[in-house]
Length: 222
Image (cartoon, rainbow, N blue to C red; front, side):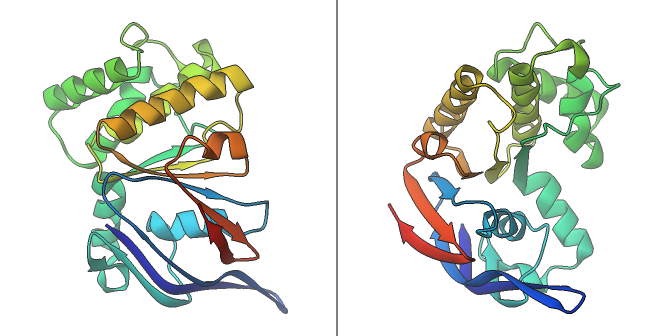
């Protein structure tokens, strides 16, 4: 499903060259739950951006569902990001003036799905994360854990090939973070492929496979 071959990513900041990734190679198969773990500056968010087709390698090759991402044009990349990848972010990234139901429908709106089907799919996604009674609420009327569950529902609504979660418990207390990780665990048991980025070993322990990054390289796997 996911294949990176000798991927490097270099950023030029004025006269300073920063090598965020340095020859990373990995494979992720369908149905796996993988955690990418490492300290700040290890390259894990850069790797997540490349996996999620939000960024491209400076060198090396990246394949998503057996397609070389370098061969995709901007329209193809937009479709992959919208329809094949579900994103969950630390900061939730919800529209503050939109209801829960509308926030979850957004990926379907961008995919030009008709209104009645958008609502049906969004309702099902919210019910799957236990928020069937909160569909008309605004993000400001919900707790951090509830907002993250909305974000998970939004990631699920297009039935994506893969769910990418970047520090999904970073803004939550320990108890709420555990509740969110239980949802990810259940989703994986249901067959969803999940790649999680975190710096917390307790969060990473929910995954079946741990990839440790340091200084832009894979240090080891467990």
